[in-house]
Image (cartoon, helix red, strand yellow):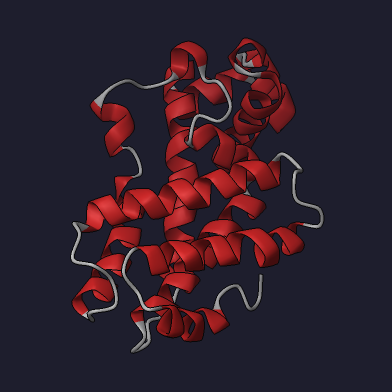
Length: 205
C-alpha cells in the first residue's frame, strides 16, 4: 500500500502538478482511504518527500546492479544505461525527484535539495574517479566531473520522456551514446580508447 500511495502521488504530481495533489485524490487513485494515507505518511509534505526518496532509492538499486570490470570507462556505460533504465521504468518518479514536475510549496530548499539522493550522485563520481585513477581522464575533482555527466544524462532523459526522440532507442543510439562518448573524450580520454570502451555502451538499451 505504501508503494501504491507513492506511485499515485508521483503520477498526480507529474500530470497535474501540486494543485492536483490532495489526500482524497491520492487515496482514491491508490484504492484506499485518506486515513490510511495519513497513517503511512503523516502529512502531504512528508508524502512528497517520500516520493522523492523512493525515486532515488530505485535509482540506487539500479546502480547496484552495474558490474565492474578492469575497464573503468566501459563501466561508466553501465552506469549511464542504469540511469536510462530507471528513468524509463519510473517516469513519474523521475520527473518528481528532479523537480521537472513542479512541486510548488512542497519543494525542498537549500541543503535539503543538495543532499537528497546524494548517494546516487556519488556512484557516478566514484565511477569517474576510477577512470581518473586509471589515467583515462584528466585529474579533475570527481564531483566536478560527475556534475557534467549527470547534467548531460538528465538533459537527455527529460527530452526523451517528453517524446522528442522517436523511437527512444534511436535517441540513445544517435544522440545519447555519441554525446556521452564525446563528453568522455573532452574530459581527457583519447579518442581511440574511448571508442573502444564505448563499444559496449547501451548494448541492451
